[in-house]
Amino acid sequence: MKNILNKRIIVEIVLMVCFVFTGYTISVKYNLHAMFESEFAEKRVNEIIIVFLCIIISFVIFIFRRWQDVSRELLLRMKAELHVENLNKQINFILGATKTGLDIIDRDYNVRYIDPEWQKIYGDPKGKKCYQYFMDINEICAGCGVKQAFDTRKMIVTEEVLKKENNRVVQVTTIPFQTNTGEWLVAEVNVDIRDRKNLESALEKSYKNVQEMVDIRTMELNMRNEQLQNEIAARKKIQQELEFSNRELEETLWKLERAIRVKTDFTAMVSHELRTPLASIRESLSLVLDHTAGSINEEQNELMQIAKRNVDRLANLINNVLDFQRMESGKLEYNIKENDINLAVKEVYKMMHQLAKDKGLQFEIRIEDKVCLLRFDNYRIIQVLVNFVGNAIKFTEKGSVIVSTKFYGKDVYGRDKLSQNDLPEEFVLVSVQDTGIGIKKENIPELFDRYAQVGEMTERKTGGSGLGLAISKNIIDAHRGKIWVESEFGKGSVFYFVLPVR
Ligand code: ADP
Image 1 (cartoon, rainbow, N blue to C red):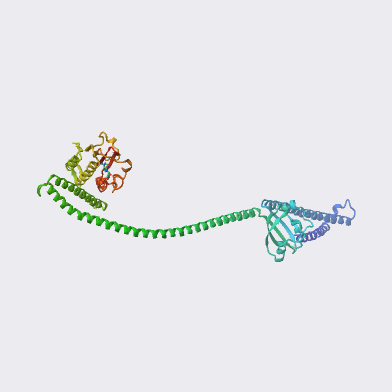
Image 2 (image 1 turned 60 degrees about the vertical axis):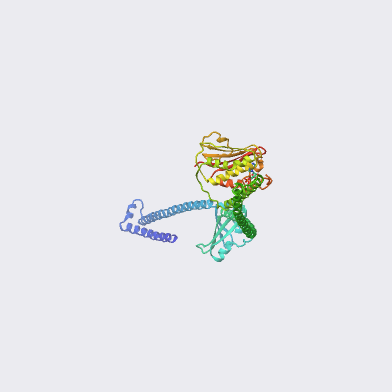
């Protein structure tokens, strides 16, 4: 720019000389100096005046041109300065907003430039080395980025802790560059990374926490695992023991079943084998008692009667045992069809009244005519009735035995007085009431269990198998009926069964 300006000044001076010479030549040629003749007498003086005038004019033009140049240059400079100032402001604003500091350091660690924000904190850097200025120390920092940048001529990134700024952590990017005079400098861009560091340490902390939690959880899981393994081992041991005792149990069960089977088979065989000769004895006794085999005296008759009663008892016992075994093995079959319950009661009366009479008991049947036809196995229901009446006579020394039947519909009076509540909608109630020895309250619940009599209840004085009531319950259950007893010890009992009307 300056060169160009110099050349222009030389050209203009040459033009000025040309102008003066041309002016002088023209004035001589056209005799212009005559204009001043009146005032100046001498021609030479006039010529000098013209030359002088030419010089003044060209000088004025030259000055004007210079003034133009200077004012243009001034304007440009002002504009440039304004632009730089704005730029500076913007840069400072950005640096301030991003908490970024900027400085320039030379080879001898002198601070050549420091941005105003930093100057406010660190003061004037004049005469101070960068390490003195920033770090308050008298030798270059360990791992100094400035030195590395100068040595390698490459950009270096380091992290610094600024003690003067309450240990603020900054990331320093040191960029080497060369000025137009060939001098090497470095620019340091310091970016505040406190937030990032805080975030990093928070992250690290939470990572540590998570890690700790994971460790604890893993430890717990390992412990639980160990516990589980122990439990599994203990369970396995128990299982093995169980399997072993199961096997033992199965073996015992098998032995027991075999023993029961042998016993049952044996009982069945014995009972069966006993029935035939008993039937023959019974037949023979009947023939003697009927006098078919000739006449017998009173004493003989009585002895025969005793023999027949015992044979009957024995036959009854054997029948009960056989029935019970059939029931247990589910082999007892029922012939259920329409039958008249009153007829069944009457038949039992015929069969048993002599027995009651022999004991001097009053034996009565109170049947309700409206009792309708029912579906039942006549033979088995008679068996239940014989058992009830037989027991009543057996356990009654004086008084009465009364058999009654009664129909109960939905709304029949007295239905609610029955001790049982889950009875069928319509049914016939059959009861056998006696005035005998009665049954103790505590013995009632197990009365219908098999061998119930076996025990202290009647002390086997009366004989019997103790199977009669169990068989009766089984028969009534098979008819979907109900069976129960109400009794008062010492006063008498009432045995009931119910058959549903279907
Ligand atoms: P058993 O054939 O021995 O009579 P049951 O099963 O018919 O067997 O009767 C079981 C027991 O119930 C009887 O031994 C007796 O103790 C008692 N029992 C049954 N009916 C009566 C009754 N009417 N009065 C008193 N006790 C009875």
